[in-house]
Image 1 (cartoon, rainbow over the protein chains, first blue to last red):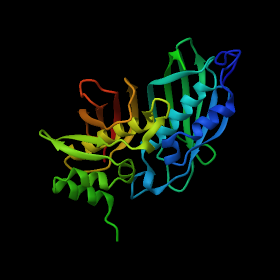
Image 2 (tube, each protein chain N blue to C red):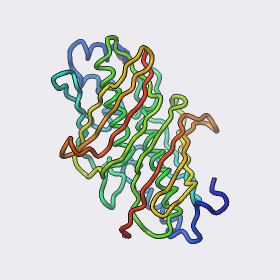
Image 3 (cartoon, one colour):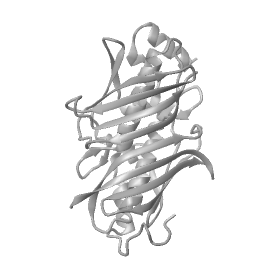
Image 4 (cartoon, rainbow over the protein chains, first blue to last red):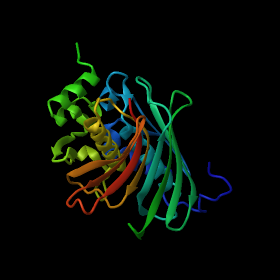
Length: 151
Length: 146
């Protein structure tokens, strides 16, 4: 949740539809059929369909953690892009994920991220992944470096 | 009838064929991961670069989720390979440090089991491109066994 105007600077630099278009062209998101479902300032939700070639455990159809990692990393990065005050590169510093439940077969996976604090050079992001309406499968914390070199 | 995954893992171990462990895991086949065993039973994963792995087309760089998934995978593979009775461990959590950009080239990874208990194991893993001494990412994770 972006509240108190803390995370969102007065004038974020990049229009949300530009960010969405950019994200739609990311090859690995295309490769797993992931797409942006919702984008607000400081908040992003991605979704991806369950697919049998993304599975780790063929006896249960549980998705590989790499898929969840990808969705959380991208949702988190996109949330950061939506609040930065000028156009710049960002880089994931670290990403910590707790796997709360297995990602079960035949259900879409959603990843939601919330950039809850933006400092001059660092952004802090919380994330969660879930299936169905609110079956949480993972939670995450990520930090990003905001690169000083503007594009 | 398709062979059960656990039997595939067991067979692969018995035949000392680590690549067959990868073949039993669809997501690793999808990424195009190959694996080789080094002396001492250490597995080295090789992720050949493909355009579909890119996460930042501007640089271009491999998606952080791909690198994170590779680190989690090499940890899982090392556990499967090192355990007496092969199981598919379940990931409890992972913590990934991104150290350098993962450029558009081949990536390698290896894992080291730092502690193995009866129910949980702790694994550290590193990924690199040109030089193992200059890792692009490092992770540690906890995995449930059995």
